[in-house]
Image 1 (cartoon, helix red, strand yellow):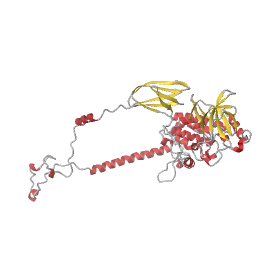
Image 2 (cartoon, one colour):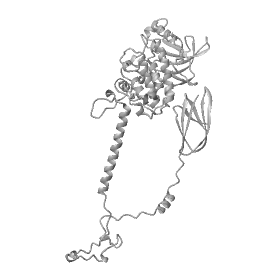
Image 3 (spheres, rainbow, N blue to C red):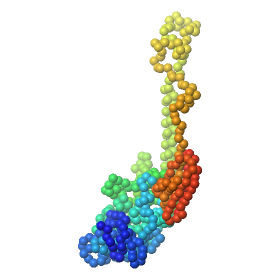
Image 4 (cartoon, rainbow, N blue to C red):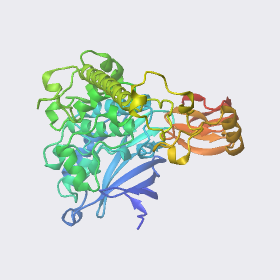
Length: 472
């Protein structure tokens, strides 16, 4: 049931539910502004007391002091009956859940902008002693002006002490760090792991730790390394392999020590890929094994890129040798060309065999012309191929003309925009990154409520690709 008020906030609408409780859109009649109210139900023993728990108020006061361009402002907190709540800034934008679509990666440039901005906000919070502990796509908003903000600070305060919450399932399971399942103390490196999971999803369109249920996902987070992102998607370089191997490490000591270092590497990911040799840290990505050895490539300190190149070269040489051997074997076993056929009815006598005179011309028979069915060889005679002109004429009578190939329009839009083709909506980009359109003239419009629309009139050629890149 929708409550009428929480504290001084008048409830306008329910906006969603999460593992902890409901989220509402409210109005502050005193300051004349909207606010988002995140709630959690208080345990009965606490609800009987007046006011919110002391530890809760202390933690929220720490969050209220945070002021950063990438952090949603916390306005207020309190308790109404058996509901504790936090009131935060209302953000005009789209949360990241709408941009993460399975098997549809977003452009790497946009992924870096989003994640590096959130990492900047986390670094600021960590310097002020605040750990988020629940970094998920639901708490990241891409604003209409292209900025990003992280909300959900203070949720950790709601779910501790005497408030009802399962510590192992505080946030969405897929984004929790390994230490959160064992009840160990969370720190800055816990938030870095969760943010790295989001980065992996943006780059590949796939979660790094997938499973049919929460228990399987939990097991993979704690025990199994993720697949290289460069193998899970078509990335332009290998720099993200290095970054995510470190950020997704199972042990906190093997991860980035601070979110500011994580953000710095993200912004120079291409530079990392061009370094030689590329270091491979102990981390959360699967490492290939060298042939005949139980040691990984990383343990020998070898360059992963060079090792992969050598293996590729060996594979190419092997394929070439196999093809050559196969050709030689085929050429040795192919049947020899058939000689002129000799009439089988006339058996040579001993006298004719000893005579040096050549055979009479009447004994030589032209191939497959004078032979009778009884005299034909066991193999069927080869078919006579029709003339090319006959083949072309037959094909023109049967096969319809091939349709023109569609044209392709690739989209790279930041932060997001609704795409219209000839005034017909085709969806939101991202995740939409590709359009297949018939050749000809077309009008493409990309709209974002925070800026003027982009309008393009294009002449599309069959089979050609046109790239549209725009930042609002």
